[in-house]
Length: 95
Image (cartoon, rainbow, N blue to C red; front, side, top):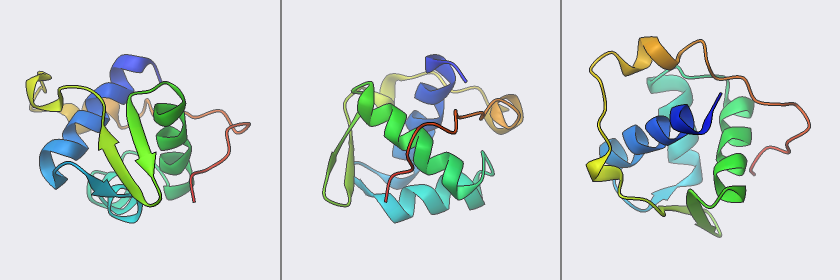
């Protein structure tokens, strides 16, 4: 997964759930509602986003560090990204 894919997934999350969002709500939404990946992969993805300063985390709350309401999202976002969520196993999941 490249940074653009990650940014699109996060933009979709924050548009649908608002800003800020709880970690558990983000994992549930991305994994089960949007079906972008297993919960452990989604937690690794969120850890990567924090490490790359796309989002910030304070305790159990995630906040967008980009203008998610300005990101262009295609209508077929789920089908485009469903096979692209591959996170390296060396990254620790967010708990």
